[in-house]
Image (cartoon, rainbow, N blue to C red; front, side):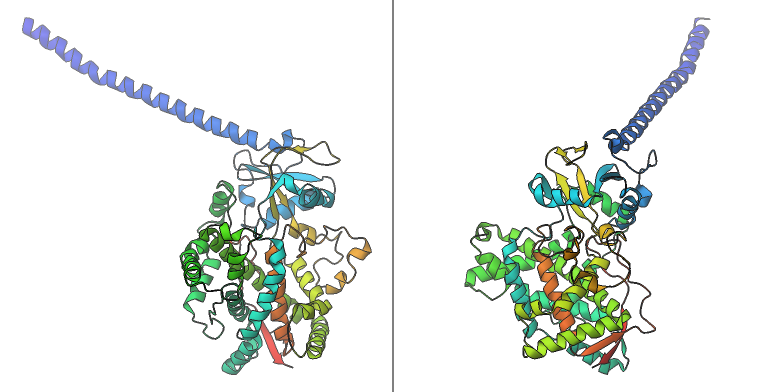
Length: 491
């Protein structure tokens, strides 16, 4: 009898054990769901508060999705679409408007006077994160001279086209490919005294590696933007190529220092510069500066040269005017390039300006407020750390500033500022402090290329010419992606 009772009690005990375990599991699951719900609610609350940041400051902003914000508007690394939309929506009613890059609040300046204050009068109150390089601006003339000297020793662009025409027996050729080779060779000689010979050896290993990094396509443009926004300090799209080239350049610098070699190139100037303090800077920092200069100058120069040739091919009368000016000035100077010759080529300057206006390499300039900043003549105060965009492309395409803004009209700049135009209506001036030294180098490279080509050839559209020039959404400096075929005829 006792055994039966004991067995019965034990049976009850073992039957209850699973029930207790189930209850514990249920409690654990309930706690987990509460925890997840709390975390999700916190995330939603954080995002919703973030997405009314500009509203709370009294600044107009786009209506954003309660959770995703402007995620679906982030279509390119250069933010052309979202900045243009914001500019078009608020430019007539606001001096500044807000948007969000993921959950990061970004202010877009819409008023030219406010832009001028930020870029000039109150310049020291901002960190200018899209300045090309911190090499002193006074070295720009030296770099221009080095580029002109390198042009004499480099393989000529017009000669390469002649070879291409003979080989293909076709007048319609891909100009972009030849311009890429020429620009890399010229920069290699001017900066490093290195002739990559990519113009004469199109299968150059260095050229192939270099272009792979320039035209690299990450798996997602949104992921690339996310990495940039939440990585400090501000980074650019040259990190991969800097990591690739920096060991080579450091070895070149160390070899020069060990052997006391002083080639006549821009790298030697930086190494020997005393006033700028480059002699005391680490070798790695100087190497990064040169690589950044090489890469940014290459992208911007290639973009402007190709776009200029494309527009000149569409506008034959303007091409004839430019060609006549170039041949006349070059003939009077015994076909020798110099800074003085570039100054004489007035219409060439106008063509380059108009090309930069239509196809600016930078869509926007990025600033960061170093302290709370009260916007002049408004009640708006930006917080310390706020990111600010100056919408370069939107201003340059504004039909209220530029009549027939989508047309190629170099003549508009003949007396642009004498017409009472705002000094910030053209944001691509090489003399502006936010552009820095690379703008001067780009001006020189573009001038050298157009002089060489238009002295000997005329260009027109052919059946393979693109309807419009398309740009990579993965590059911060806008870079053409489609091949640019043009009909080439010797003069």
